[in-house]
Image (cartoon, rainbow, N blue to C red; front, side, top):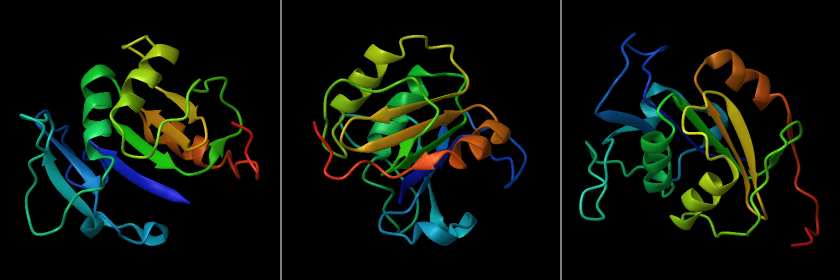
Length: 155
């Protein structure tokens, strides 16, 4: 049910915070057993609509969205995207935005405009959720609160 994950903090890998790069899960990788080898190093800024990455593996299709979110929410170090909802969040986007559309960033920003936020989760209407964390304790706690989206989902 995990869509993808990204980090700009290398805790668990080398213990440094990266300022100009982000690790993003590979495209089409099995999310049940993610390891350090399942991540792709990408530049943290989109240049002329392009995402630059190293190696032969392509980053997740949600990479542009996550890079934009990292730019806006400067205290967030980890983003986990799932295709389920988080049970204990009060944040829900108002519009359904298809997976991979950059418009999702603006919808999230309209619901959570505080750019200094460090730990929060938001449900994406008809799509899933984002857990945006500054620390691993919050991230781990929120992963325990994932729940299936209703079926059929009334949008």
